[in-house]
Length: 106
Image (spheres, rainbow, N blue to C red):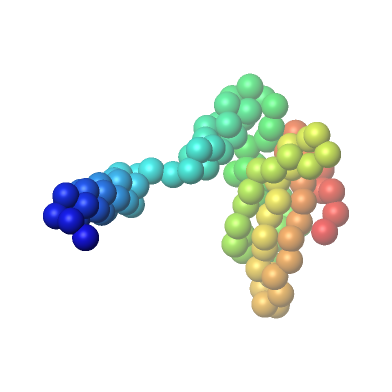
């Protein structure tokens, strides 16, 4: 392999390491991944959806711990998907209409 080819490969490798470092340490995220909380914030401010904090104060959620909460779109409507740990150790999911707060089933 010629010295010019080795130099080009070395520069390409250094460039790849640089890009990887920026992606890893620079807070880069795939397109759309960092927008979710902003979309939820705008929808809450518009009054389109209930705040998640309001939903989590419901009596039916007593005795549970929220493991994960997501705002999703199911069949054209905003839905909160909650993954819950019950005090008996069972993990289950509950779905709520994000606009009305109405339970949608397990």
